[in-house]
Length: 370
Image 1 (cartoon, rainbow, N blue to C red):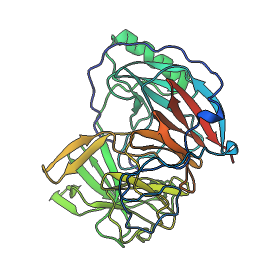
Image 2: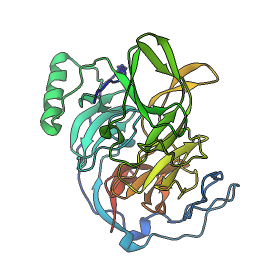
Image 3: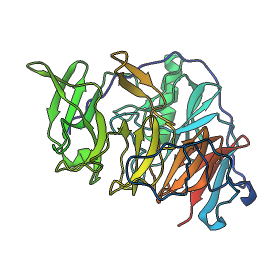
Image 4: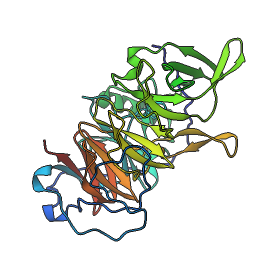
């Protein structure tokens, strides 16, 4: 499998330090949010979901309080550090947005006063909050942390983070893109790769599908710019297809979609909002959820140019749970699409089988009990 990767864009950075972390007991059951959300939602054109989320199409008042049952959640740990935001430190590739592979240790880009650093799942600082952009991974598996420091300091930071994670800092390099595409529904997907003005087509292989029966597929036309150069027509639409070209939601044209990743649900976007569908293409939530992580370049038909958009994705499911953002507040979905923790928290980040949720200045890790 060939890998081509897109250009990394360095940023100008300044200096701050993080505080240490600790643990305490999580909030009492009475402090958990309501389990039945209320939102202004648009009607989905795909199969009507059976969900706890109700929408009248008009702005509604808060529903009656209904706390999640005690056995649904278990508390694990609390980070005392008051980070403004946390996101999964991951490969920020818009063609295949997803969390880290199953079994991987979660790492988190953390932001304080506009500067970004890196911690592990226990809150141990791996990189201080010095960078203007969120810490991520380049295609070579190196940390992208563009902080303003001397070369000696850079070497020290790189050695320390590599010792802790087995991944050093990225020194910067060229890159490209890789997309699964078809020119029309029913056509089996192929692989488009592009790198700094050049592009080509490859046959789809098992490794490209990440093990999913249906995988994200972009439907658009090819542009031939020369004997050895090819590109994809800007725009198009997204859906899911299998190796034979069968489309999962044949009546839909989504703005973006995410991977199933071996889970029961996957995210889809229309009119800027996200919903989740099952493996048969049925909607299990309304289009309620907002983009909350990642950045990429998207083509604007209005300007005829590409513009960087951030954030631009939602989180997929991770071991049966998804952290979701709705109207500026965070909650947790279970694998049936039920908002088992209502979107009432000021911050959120995914974790296998649960999520980090921020309340009263601390980040609390909740896990869904089986």
